Length: 260
Image (tube, rainbow, N blue to C red; front, side, top):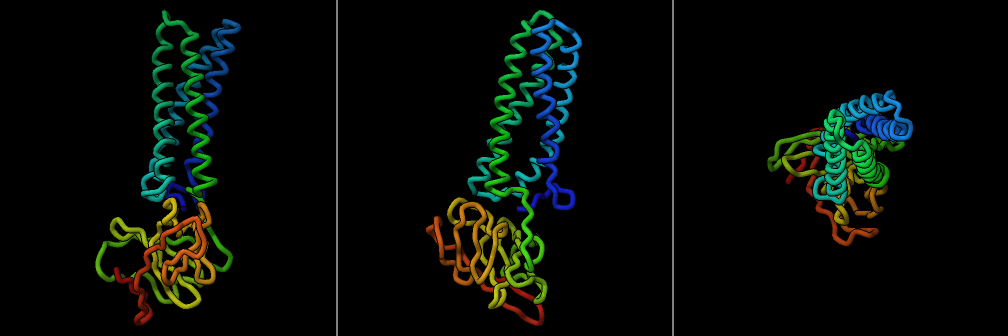
């Protein structure tokens, strides 16, 4: 699924997360050095790294929220994973904000603050692990480009009984386009036999079929490899058990119409 917050198909969220990660780790390291040496310069450095980490975390969260809302497929295992990923990162940010505030209190035991930072890093690493799963397993933010099958396409439409969704020569054979029609996500695609349309949601775990591959009249989910016949929706390879819904498509006067 191509990221909604990107620069030339490069998603912004993975680019930005390296900064808060480095700053938070750095603040913990310098605070430990302060405890070991009682050198105030280490404590000062850790304090400013704390602040930089929070700022970097907020900046990284913006494209992350955009992708959570608009890129992660709804009603999918990835949506639940992304929600947990976001909640963990939010908890980590709030924890480090508290650490920054408490560092102004000279009466507090500084070791307690270092322990809080360690807990924050544990949360951060857990969230990072889940983020990696979202990218490398669920392919969130991945921009699929297939040889001779054109680039990623996506459109938004108001819901009505019949829609003009493509020009007759718009898509290449085996190319797909994701349509957002009201709350529905439908894929319009071109097979060797002509245009077809089917639900974007894989019936196994909710993966986006538009983010998968289509060849010889079969679309494959990118998450676990389930395959479906694009003409009738039947499962041709598991682990999916249920067929996907297909829709009537008609070409008239060089325009492709979809009937809901």
